[in-house]
Length: 53
Image (tube, rainbow, N blue to C red):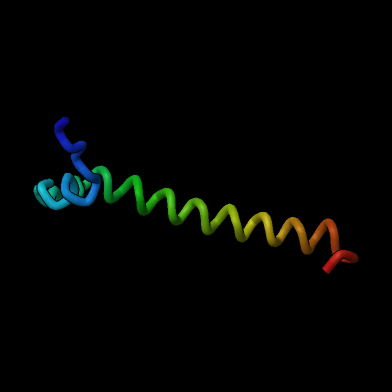
């Protein structure tokens, strides 16, 4: 029986591929929007539910 390739071996064989500019923009927009939405959620929580903090 042939041995199944392991994930570590396959990852070592892969060539390095840099991120495309559009991918970098998508990642940065996602991180920024996540931080902004988290800030809005905290603000709403402190504003509308003050007794629970």
